[in-house]
Structures are given as C-alpha cells and as structure tokens.
Length: 163
Image (cartoon, rainbow, N blue to C red):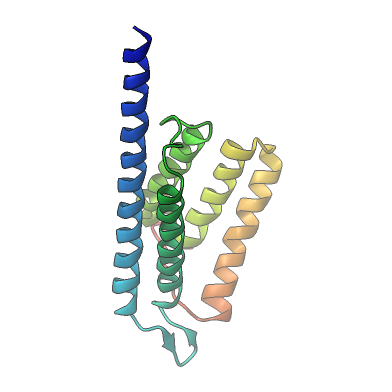
C-alpha cells in the first residue's frame, strides 16, 4: 500500500516539474514576442526614448527571467515541490490586478491606471494602510504624467477621464 502512494507522489512531482517547465517556455516565448514586436517600433526619437524603448527592455527582462527559471528547473533534478507553493495565491492576485489594470486603461488612462495599480497592489499584497496606498498611487500617477507627458513629451493614453 505504501509503494502505491510513493509512486503517485513521484508521478505528481514529475508532472509538476513538466508543468513548471512548460510555463517557463511559455513565458520565454512571451518575452521573445514582446522583444520582436517592440523592435518594430521606434526605439529613439528626436526628443528622447521612443515608443519601443520601454517594451523592448521589458521584453528583454521577461526573456532573461524565463531563461533563468528554465535553467533552474533543469538543474534541480527530482526536487519539484507542490503545485500551490505558499506564494501562488499572491501571484494570482497580482495577475488579476494586471489584467484589471489593462482592462480599465481606456477608462482611467495610463497615469491614473498605473497609479491605481500600484496603490491597490500595495494594499492587497503588503497590507499597507489606506493612506499610504492613496499617497503612493497619487504620487505615481503625477510622477508618470510629469515624466512622460511633460518632461519627455511622450503622449500617453488618456482614457475617458483625460489624464
């Protein structure tokens, strides 16, 4: 009876390792796609960084992290852990916040949308007080607006609110 349980656990660990590896490859492909499409945009304009600057570097960072994940998975033979690791729920919360942010960008615009994303993420993940989250969200929204729209003269999506 004990041997059957051990066999199932080994199969489970192998399955989870394969799932982690597939996830790493998907993230690697995502990073490569971001790099490819952002390289089609103008990297540098006459006034400074162009529309392809930030997505290119984000894609490069995603690709590097995915490669590191895949290498780490391949190096640790048979040490796969449980599928729902302690931080999995927090990662899913962040993923849902990112999706909500992108869905609400047409309403709030880039500056306010990412300010809200930062404030809500602080509250959900870090259990910070509302006043600190509100001040941070406001500071980030104003900072993004100032840096990109005023200082670099890069137009950002404004949304219905217009900011």
